[in-house]
Image (cartoon, rainbow, N blue to C red):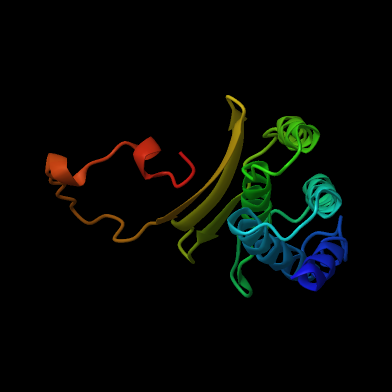
Length: 181
């Protein structure tokens, strides 16, 4: 597992700062693998303090340097760089063995990253009608970080619409549905 962490941490640096090419796929999915390994470290600790600190530093450098924040690419599919980074940092921050300085560094980096823009991918048909919209939003607040994705497909323009209110048992507040609280 340590070899996988070393390899994936190194992958986070390959092509870092580039945008619009395939190098993001290796970085993004390396962050996903690191998230799974960080979960394993929580379940059954196998990393020492120095190794855990190195993983935090790699994740923070990736957060700072990643410029390719595409959510969905019509040719490549879901890229998820921002979401995988958010999941990795969330997982690392929830490790009870993580030292306070690393927890503070994660929170400070997330607060510093902020939300300067909301990347939105849109699909427009030959009649210039919006057909699909994908947005990824990450936010900080109250000492926590969350990432959400929204996909909307639009169709049947000009057709009559009948809306029926669902039963109360099928309705929930968005906060109840979000996996990270």
